[in-house]
Image 1 (tube, rainbow, N blue to C red):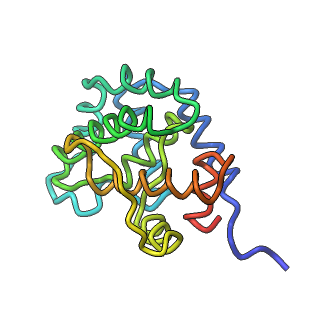
Image 2 (cartoon, rainbow, N blue to C red):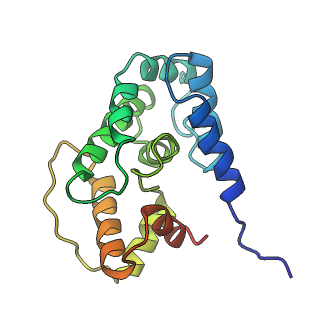
Length: 186
């Protein structure tokens, strides 16, 4: 009998390799391709709800003309998200989410987390409504106290701090990708 839950490892390996092969944001066509492939693979398409005048090429140009490559270069050095480096991660997520917001009028935090994850896989937790619902369930709606700046995306920040708490208190020794798999029911 086949496993009804798909194993996403092979699919993810393609996305990781795509971002390893093309890590930078200096070619609009490649940035458009990465946005499309990651967004469609993970049900977080950029054009969903963006309006009739939306053009993905405009988003790609904004990303390419931003400081994202410099920011990601620093984040890629992170081996394990923790309270010492999490604000650096949240800063980059907010930066990228703001670019997407300015072009779509929507907070595309799910797409941002997924896109950034494939560029810096050891740093970013994958956020979406399924993972957010599951972390609340896993923690029995326990309030996780943390101090964070208002300079970050509040919803993603809360999710990430819950993930850190969940990992450090219930899954010691696991990396954040293992936590993603638990929350996304892999």
